[in-house]
Length: 538
Ligand code: NAP
Image (cartoon, rainbow, N blue to C red; front, side):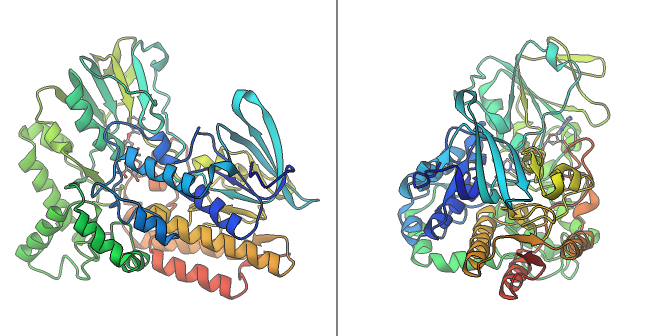
């Protein structure tokens, strides 16, 4: 509870103390609102608090994956590597909390169990369960969900798992104590970004590693390296330029490698190869910026996809293994992975790849069974991802006007306006919610834009003596159609990705993030400057 708040009535409850919740708290305090933040973890950091698995690091460059709201902060903080490790990003989050006295406003080890809108008082009743099972209720005018897009772990119900005698871990909920893989036979299930990052590190530590792969993924080398202090000083001397360039990016792969504004089909095969080689040498997500139509045309996409498949075959020595690792979907359709020695790991003597694309795995007491073969394992790591974008929202017990649960409103997919609010849920804001660019851009850029828009909206209400803001049904309908229309214009819906909810059985298949951050930001600004058009203000 914010130490300046003596009662259980506050202006805003913020759920989550990752980068979104921390900045929301900072900003609302600056503007004189009383705020209470609830966080289920024992400290700040959100995704970087939970994802402590071996090899975890960010796939956005560290100089760009940080706050810009404080010049002193961005000048003082020193990053050590091109791509920061999870411990370094967590230290940064802790530093931000310390520097701006944020912990005093956050209740840790506290889960929001329900949040119900009261039609009479026009406020939210938020129920929480704190440490040692203490339940508490707080009333707030605004409910702000800063719960992250990748925070609710996907733990498939594998047959026989209860019988398994070995240890199990999920990459998204990793223990704080070091997991010892020495002399162990280990299985990793899942080959998305978390698997691709952890597999090379676990392979080096364990006796034998078996990787269970349902769908092969494209991955680009990170070419991580220590950050040169001179390079860092040069960026800091003009930090605002880098931040402005970030704001102009259509995707999150880093403003230091802007997208080439040409089609892969407009150049000769030799020229395409040269451009792709350069992007491969640059490393990371910027590979997708080699051409401007990779996510728009299958014909254009295959030029880049074939290039990466050739790289794969040149790295992996066993042609059968290379074939199994070779992705068939459009490159970029599933989130592109960024690795440090992933494909090389399959050249190791102690690593086996098992294809599970045609039948699900089951567990026995001794290990994982695929077909008739049981692979005996001491430890299994689930790198099976998240109930992305909506999982943390639908599990928070949110109930809107007329006792309508959010789960009911979102039965067929997460309808919303601007990815910021939902009709029927007054004064509810989502930071980087579905329907906004979020995971398709640099998350910290997206978070800052949302926090500032929400704080401005709250100030607008206060200045005009208004108490309620709620998306109009028609504006919401049009927004959902707009997001679907843009997604359908791209190749994103062409494969089974978590962007579509396809990784969680039974989840509605709807493309959730919105491609195109700069246009989105302009739209949000226009809505605000037109008196919050599309919202009812009471
Ligand atoms: P993910 O991309 O969803 O990958 C999950 C993996 O588990 C996939 O290979 C999936 O196979 C497999 N899987 C899921 N359910 C399964 C089942 N029932 N049986 C067998 N296999 C199953 O999750 P993630 O790797 O945790 O990454 C999620 C996102 O988090 C990333 O895309 C990225 O945005 C973010 N992330 C970023 C970083 C970074 O900054 N470098 C690191 C980690 C994560 P299918 O493909 O067949 O579904």
